[in-house]
Image: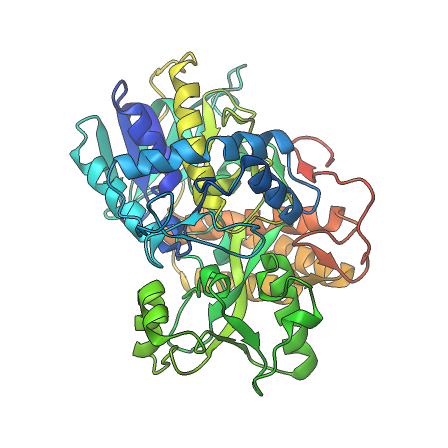
Length: 528
């Protein structure tokens, strides 16, 4: 049994920001499924949206976010995040994040523009911002004596008062599998923070790392937390289409710096879909690409920035240039084949602006949370900003909240289970789930497709629960169990939304409702 002041489940930007803001006064334990740098944050290319330039304003950033969110953003949440954007970036600069500089800029840094933004406000580190930020924060984490990092540890479930037969609605920690030796540990914590990221791996094609399996959403749901707007899964318009390019994203900034989307014959198509053309928000661009591909029977479309000077391309996008070159694509001379792919989970565990969930002493930050910031579609580069702002906010909340009593908790009981006899069942179920979610719950949906997905999820849930009840847990089993719960929540939310809005496009309900409303699911109540 392990004791800690704050247990942080996850290791992306939200997790590390929370840890560093708390570590001066508390003992912190960070759990990560693989290694410290295996997170969607580390894969982020574009940058961080923040009001830094003299010709930009907080109100303009707020308005851009509200427009992208298609009427479903919580304006208080948007204002809270945007108003704290400058200090969030200043904190990163202060600890040494090497953002790309520009002596001619009034900020001292190069700011780029991305789809949906009315100004250049994306601060970045070339085209690998997430990696640069994560590397800097990782160095800080390793140096801090109050932070314990446990790699290859995957949370199984949260320990709550309800599960212990108590009258309270409080979180006391988590059961955790050490995947290196198969042992299950009991972590007792005064405060528990979910910073587990999103659920892109519920789909066949995704820009997310393999760890993005909806763990936090599924654990919180099983524990009794409300979940909202899971139907709004953002598909990034431009994932590199190549058999050897697993999940490689082509940054939004390529379009922001003049990249053009074209058909195989070189014809542009975005102006026919939206007046903003390539600089339209992601949901608009992804739907346009999906429409063109299905109409014309295409495997992909092309993103072309070869009309820019070669030096401009290689200096602005060195990592994209190098990766494409390894695959035989010289982006200074030829277009990049791209397809949409599942990218960001806009819904999640319902929290307030202090990152509190429905359960006392349990918090959620980053992509796992639904704060109201993103609405029906996330504005580009607001995600890393959200991690920074809410990472700081949850630290303030924890410092001012009475801790859960760290009593002795029951150990994990595996007296009635055995070793799995046919693990091939897990891989088959995993493949089936991701494929039918892609086919039936993708960029464009219908009632019939959602019904088919719901039916298959019901069958898979029975199989997985039976497997879970009879065999010892493994990393694959835990992830699959969480994925099927997350898929169920996505489909249930999609079935409740009788309109098309933002990232949710329904052929049966093509109009947008006059009144915008969140889709909120409560574990023990009728859906709202």
